[in-house]
Amino acid sequence: MKEQIIALLADAAELDKEIITDILEIPPRADMGDYAFPCFQLAKTLHKAPPVIAADLAQRIGTVDIIDHLEVKGAYLNFFLKKEMFVKSMMEQALHFGASTIGEGKTICIDYSSPNVAKNFHVGHLRTTIIGNSLYKIYSKLGYQVERINHLGDWGTQFGKLIVAYKAWGSQEAVEKEGVAELMRLYVKFHEEAEKDDSLNDQAREWFTRMEQGNEEALSIWQWFVDISLNEYKQTYALLGMEFDHYLGESFYRDKTADVVKRLSDAGLLKESQGAKIVDLEEYNMAPCLIMKKDGSSIYATRDLAAIFYRKETWNFEKCLYVTGQEQKLHFAQVFKVVELLGNEWAKDSLVHIPYGLVSLEGAKLSTRSGNIIYAEDILLEAIDKARDIIAEKNPGLENKDEVAKSVGVGAILFHDLYNQRIKDVSFKWDKVLNFDGETGPYVQYTYCRCASILRSVPYDEQAAIDYSLLLDEEAIALLREISRFPQAVLDAAEKYEPSVIARFAMDVAQSFSRFYNACRVNVEDDSLRAARVKLVALTKTTLRDALDLLGIQCPEQM
Ligand code: ARG
Image (cartoon, rainbow, N blue to C red; front, side, top):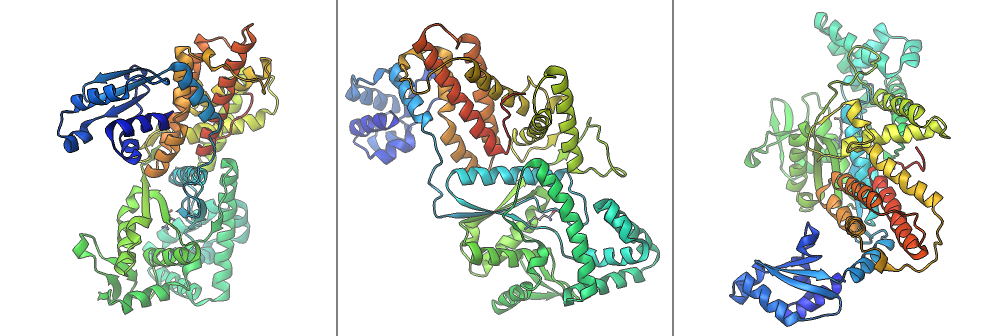
């Protein structure tokens, strides 16, 4: 129907359809029409006041079968479509929502999660994991090939320290038993002892140099630390139900940093500064980008530069997205600038840092394993436990309780994280996160279950033709209107790198469904009315499932 409106307007205004398509809007409220055409832009070319243009257009369009009436309101020409036709068109369109093809043949790399070996997977890493995974789903839905990359922090001088500490105060049993917690303890111990005895620092540097030179003993201890850590991280990923296409940590680039240094020096970009090598970025109002330390070792930025060239050569990405906390803003700005200075124009549009706000855990009682260190896994497990308690109380007879508790507990955390713009800080309160009546994941999941339950209990024939004139209740139209925003919401979310657009959309649909369900009984006597309403319920159910899936959230059929 939108196409028809566009054609009518293009004729009346004597303009190209593309121009009309850009201008035509879907108003925020139903009393403003089904479509609205603002005339501000035409005023310039036509040298008339916008309200005059709107009135002219209305007159030229005249009466048309699909239009109930037109309304000129200020600079706007509002279209009110014949309800029945509008409903039919939205229903048919929504029933055929599918994956889009705009990303076909294009690749997006997403660099996210990327915890640091021998350190705990903390709440910050939980956010990058959740946001990155959702962006992966959103871009995949649009037809892009997405490479999910885990850029593990698995290289650097800290591993020299760890080896020293392990040899001095550690044991194989303790590391095997306690895993990352023990590695963190050793790391802290190293710093305490190094305060008193500076020679430990020299030893640590030596061990890291050995690692860089390929010393077998150094590398086998390091590899063991990596394996132990990765093993723990994978438990967290398993709880989240998330996977990666590539674990390519910083260590993967250790033999590729020399090439970066060469490229920079060939381009005349490398400068000496106090024995180190840097790229001066003063002209761009940034601190210099450190490339090589005095002792010749590479750093975080060098490995990021190597990674960019590797990814560009391997996947020829259209975009490479980096999901990290906002404190890394400068780091990425520097690295991206250096890539650009090497004559890569694509760096400007293709490399994107996607920052997010902090997580605070006020009011959250967490069972911490040691000291005040919070593990993401513990938060997830606690959410699952709490969900299990709620289920035991509200629906003790439920089958596969454990599985449902996992979907609900984890879903609650994911939804809470993704419901607000990612740059906003997230604060954690269990009763808010898991509230079944609030604006929460469980509420949307519960709405999904209600739809599922209706479809189980109300008899209907899936093949029956639907009489759309039976869906003219205000609440039914409002619900359909929400649902039909789905494709646009996916596009917006991708364009802004903002999963919250999808989370808000899911919530709007869920709330709209509640209003519909309160106002319109589904299990009515009349076969045709029942069939029409059931169809709308089925459509709501698939839409909620698809939207939650884009957030990484599962939908149990009962809860
Ligand atoms: N390991 C880093 C951290 O935990 C994040 C890495 C982000 N990705 C990158 N290519 N630098 O802060």
